[in-house]
Image (cartoon, rainbow, N blue to C red):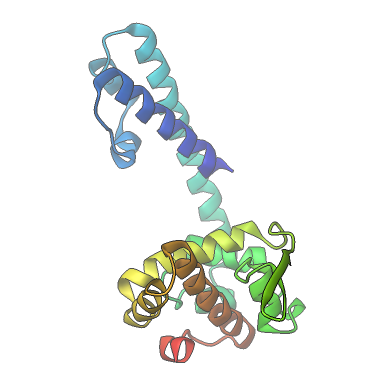
Length: 208
């Protein structure tokens, strides 16, 4: 929630700067700005005041975000499932925390398919004789896990040769969204076994 609020202030500042200056300001540069720096960017005092408010909120939210992340990492950094999840391509501290805490006890999912469904990684279509007869509720499952695995998939397709080949093979047959979701599904299935069996991620086994 705090990250989303910070992002909204960053986007607000970018929009303001673009309207006033006609050019872009990167999010990383915005995070490094101080309130006193704003006075040199805008001539109008009310525009300046609005921009300073954005920067003040960004800094305040960043401090709180770091405090929360530090506290949670201290509590969970030694949990075996957390350590093993970080071996999955594209999964770092934040995604591992998200996946582990949103998943809960992996034992509540009797099969890997149940977990994939909970992560919104499988189609919600109802088929009969290979024909689409309708769709189930797309909002079933956990949206945070869906986001986490898509984020990991976007990293994996760039840096993992096994994932890249799988993604490109899917992309040749469909569009980018479906291809990245298919890759996210692969990572979700692999993570299920990583957490259940407390083993390191093996890309060769995951992608065949």
